[in-house]
Length: 303
Image 1 (cartoon, rainbow, N blue to C red):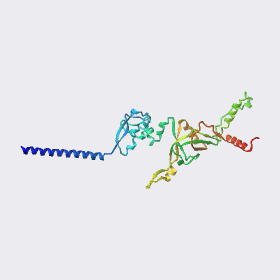
Image 2: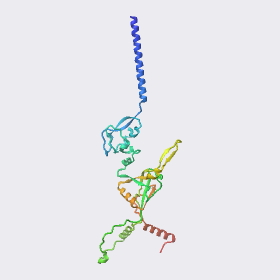
Image 3: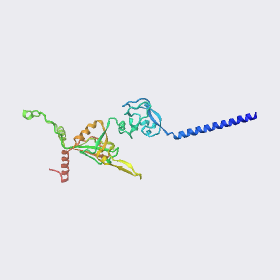
Image 4: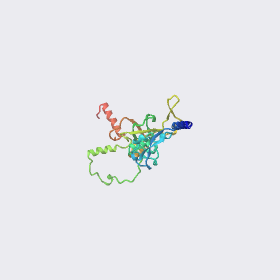
């Protein structure tokens, strides 16, 4: 009987040791698996299928846990939900799919999608202004930084030739005379309007426009010493157009495009602040009057 009890006790000890070894191996294996498993991050996903053009609201967003691999940086982190709400879907997004930064036009995608800035400025466009245009005078592209305020002044030397059309007989030939004499203020206004013929200069954006991006600059790289260098090649210098991406009102796109095509000169100026009201423009005749007034003041004036 004693031997039977001792044998049973030995078996229980062996069983307990076996269970302990199994549990220890199980926990060790789990720890090794967790150590080899990549870390996870929480990103935003769509709660339903989203079509192009839809405005994103908070109920369309959900959190999703994904592995932190090379693709994780392309997704929008879960803590950026405030920068996504109110944005616009730019690419189809399926239910449960993590939202790519490039799939939306919103504040959270500003670093990867240039048009994301438009989510904050309805009624505006991003206009590419080529600095390499023959009729454009501007500082070097490297002189600009995103956020700079610039002015665009168009200079027109001559008006395009108008088409010839048949005209009626002059009043003096048919014996017709003016029936009334214009009032003095009307004559002054008419004289001012008659002096708007080229050559003239006009600020298209008296308040100035913002530079959103500068394209075509050499790409900056870091060498082995940690110093920043600019890598420019023959291809970049001669094939890549340097341009400013300007934030302009939609109503000014045609105006600026026509000025770029018809203006003899387009002058780009860096501005500290814009004017508070539109400018009347400056013509050669205004310049002539200014010259005469200054000359009279210097030499004593009078006839």
